[in-house]
Length: 89
Image (tube, rainbow, N blue to C red):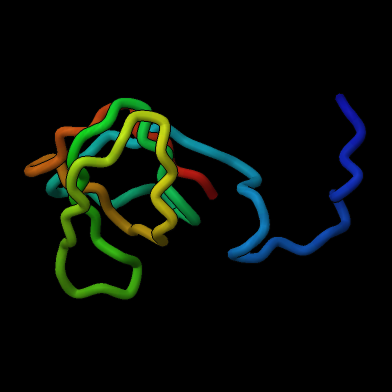
């Protein structure tokens, strides 16, 4: 295992992600963890529920390889055309 010079540093919203997971958009199931950001592998639109939001928000025309800095609790299937989405935590 490589040496981690930052293993004793505390995590924060502005710190780089410590982990990641594949996101499967769903209209019924929330994410397994609230994200720091979402990586958009293949561009398009994405519909998310912000962690403190009461309604879904659509982000249009995101480019492939972009990072969407949002703390999301859900990524919806309906309206999402982007693919290869990764949750950064």
